[in-house]
Amino acid sequence: MANIRIHDKQFKPFISADEIRKKVTDLAGALNKDYEGKNPVFIAILNGSFIFAADLFKALTIDAEISFIKLLSYKGMKSSGQIITYIGLDTELFSRHVVIIEDIVDTGKTLNEFLPQLEHQQPASLKIVSLLHKRDAAMFPIKVDYVGFEIPDKFVVGYGLDYNGLGRNTASIYQLLE
Ligand code: IMP
Image 1 (cartoon, rainbow, N blue to C red):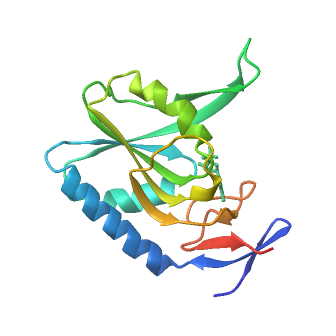
Image 2 (spheres, rainbow, N blue to C red; image 1 turned 90 degrees about the horizontal axis):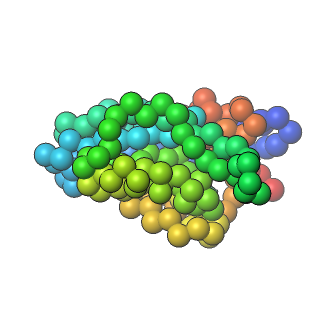
């Protein structure tokens, strides 16, 4: 496979479509086993996770629901930091088994700020499945329960992940060429 160019940067092939397919099948297998009879609610975080979420959800054989949310960050009136909120959740989470679907967990900041808002609804359980995890970049105490690939702390695109809006529409994942 050849390198690709997005905006001003070059990316090299990193994880093939075939490897992704196999990993998605493995992750779905684990979820099918762990959530049998629990009718879990999957919550996919847009935009990045849309392709992974679709492939993962297709590979589930158990009864399961899915909802798509978008995170919004804004400056709080008094806080100097960013506050993260979400839109689009159309399901009550109280006493439900909830699984967050992420494309990538990098520093863990996003989930660290967002998860307490879901915990507030008192789900029966709350777990995370992420296709990619940059463990070395972790700055916040987020436990990713189901990890597809542990990857180095380098920028990646493809299979839903973007670089400034472009690069989401590839079947494989590419890594920044330095
Ligand atoms: P975190 O809050 O640092 O864990 O970052 C989470 C979000 O940053 C992900 O959901 C992605 O949208 C974005 N992100 C982090 N690393 C990458 C990358 O290598 N490529 C594309 N997007 C990334």
